[in-house]
Every structure is written in structure tokens, then in C-alpha cells.
Length: 127
Image 1 (tube, rainbow, N blue to C red):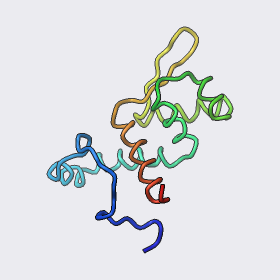
Image 2 (cartoon, helix red, strand yellow):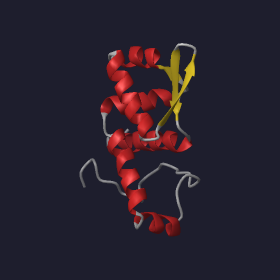
Image 3 (tube, rainbow, N blue to C red):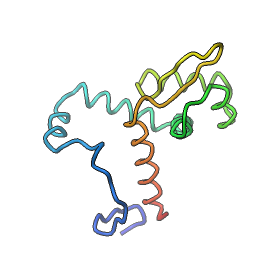
């Protein structure tokens, strides 16, 4: 067994089922091409390092483009471009506050995706 294998009998993590769909719903979703397509678009957005960092930063609360740019040491235009893609994929919301645009995660599903993704990566790495 390599370090990236997962033996569910040895997993010590406790998982909440509140955000998971029932087997019946899962089977319905898996034959719905629109849902599958949107899910792949979400995971595609999550696969970019900078976008994942942006989402991770927003888990702790809303932030302006400038705050995100400074946290990530990425240019303003690159940050705005990634935020636009995340907004288009339904992962973040934007609201105007005077001259600033403030971003937040779209909902608790996004928070769960980030938390579970990080927990699984840490688990695979033995942390």
C-alpha cells in the first residue's frame, strides 16, 4: 500500500453527513448530464492553485480584491481574473462597498468542498 492509498477501516476522521446526498439522490444526479457538467466545472475551478488559495482565504470571511491580492502576492489583474472565473462558476459572490468589491464564498457547500479537499490531501500525506 503506497502513501496515497486510503484504507477506510483505518481512517480516524469523523465525517458529517449533513452535506452529503442520499444514495437515491446521488444516483439521480449521476444520470443528469447538466449536474455532472456543472460539477466538473466546479472541480476544474478548484484545480487551479491560485483559485484554491483564494477560496481558502475566503473560508475565514469576506475580503476585498486588494486584501486577496496582498495575501496571495498576485497582481490585481490576475486576482480579478480568477475571481471572475470563480464567480461565473457559482463559487463566490461579489458585492460593492463604495469603490471596493467584496468577495465571499457563495455558500456552505463551497466551504465544505475546501475543508474536505484540504483534509483529504492532508490525510493522503499522512498529516
